[in-house]
Amino acid sequence: HASLDLVFTLDGSAGVGLENFRLLKSFVKSISLQFIINRDVTQIGLVVSGGRLHTVFSLDTHSTHSGILEAVNRASFVGGQGSVGSALLHVYDDVMTVQKGARPGVNKVVVLLTDGTGAEDTVVPAQKLRSNGILLFVVGIGEANKNLLLRIAGSESYLMKVPSYKDLKYFEDSIIQRVCEEAKRPVVLCRPNPCMNNGECVLKEGSYHCQCKNSEGLHCETKISRAVSSSLPLKLSRQRNPTGYHWHHKEA
Image 1 (cartoon, helix red, strand yellow):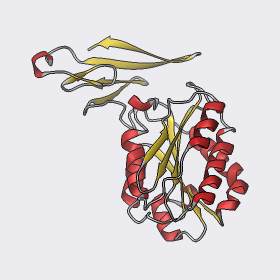
Image 2: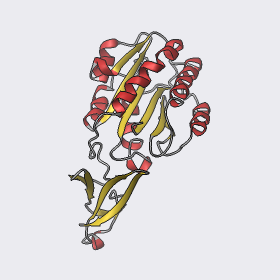
Image 3: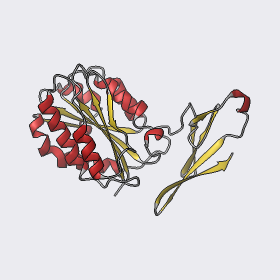
Image 4: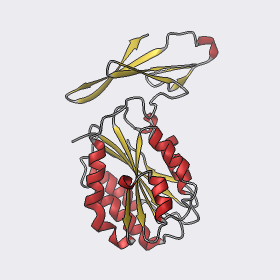
């Protein structure tokens, strides 16, 4: 079982409607049950967009199926007009991050479910995810504009067209299969960059470390004042062991 950080992005805008939103939630619950949920294998996050953006739960919030199912059930319909592009930027900036539980060296996949409404601004944010090593699957529902969806997905391989919200359940197995294939691909440790505060991720011998600028910590998470910024930069190396991952300091 390959490790995976998986984030679902759902459209909860007024045009989708409450009944279709319930079908989207059922889809997420059903797919979640097919993965082993724990800190070492699969972590799942959920974002709902509409008149406002809402992270329903982060990657490190739930480590059991029951926790995820209850949280999805509680996810409320947002309404309003949404921007899919803003939702993807939110996933990049605030969900697929080390401080929110994303694991360096683990494949990252975003599954975007959209009928194409409010998706005109999504091509550039989608490219930003891809160029930073985060894979994007687009599930286009109903009459969604295929050309636009294809530009968002970047390739036919990452686009799945579904006739209606009610038909989502028939495509679950195909989507799970594609996501699992991607979870097994080789990982680039420094994409996306695990180092915060403009720290630089440096690859070395199958590991990496964060080279910090005016900050310190494993991932440069703590900003330091200029008065003490002359302290040695901290380096981080990642080592794998049978029980998962552990982190340790190395002096620069």
